[in-house]
Image 1 (cartoon, rainbow, N blue to C red):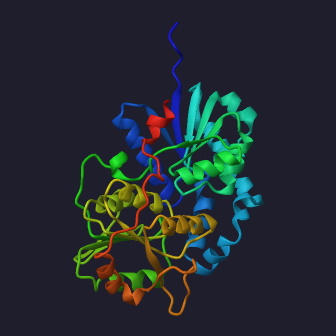
Image 2: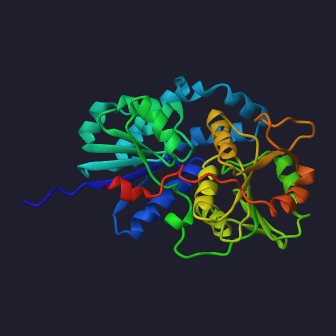
Length: 359
């Protein structure tokens, strides 16, 4: 009798650009090795989460408060969203049983009951972690489904800490570096690439950063959800998918600095440095505990050039970090071009996601 085929399902809520970008990268990696993976975008339940993410991103003070209040992700509103997401996943997955479920965001898993997953024919769950470490809501989801769930991380430090907490964990390479499947071929890229969040940016920050970039003498691109700005002008992006691909098409062999939130982009920068492409991160102020921890990791691994301060007189979020007033960006870009990141190898995973997942 032939062995029953396991159906690979990959889910993500279309909120921001980080998680969707990781899901697209994982889908692309699967295609490259001939693995059939069905991508489910949890669109019906996304609007409220998208609104909350946008409000936090566009209000710097709200974002600062979120650093000291990580419990919001397991509060009543988050639990309600998690349950709704779980129901949407159940309605979308259909009757393709047995199912191996890879999820790039934890709420649908957190909202599902073990009984519901059994009824859906889910035989295993992989929680892919774009950040340096999973959020506590991700840990809670893994504990809730401890018999099925494995947390996938891209650095050995987090793997060790999670295993100490009794969480099943696997180590893979970072998801977004093109060496592991985001792009087919090497690309030149631009020396400086900046991006807002996929949920936007305070309008005044956008204007100020754009003005500072216009003073650079090297090529650069500045990505917002709606536009790609360069020294020669601006191009409108038709949709979120095009926006994601546009940004990653500008990150290539010549890229020396990425200006961004300390989000999943920390994994991108670390992956590039691991394979011998020196890349600095200039960080925007973190939004939440997870981005603060990402910022600490980037500093500790020697890839953080400094924190870009968008408001005059503001102190850096991470004490001891180099402060970069946005008006001094030109000088800092010149300086970092003469220095190499102090990258510390042997910290991040080497095997692509599906190579680990299929063993």
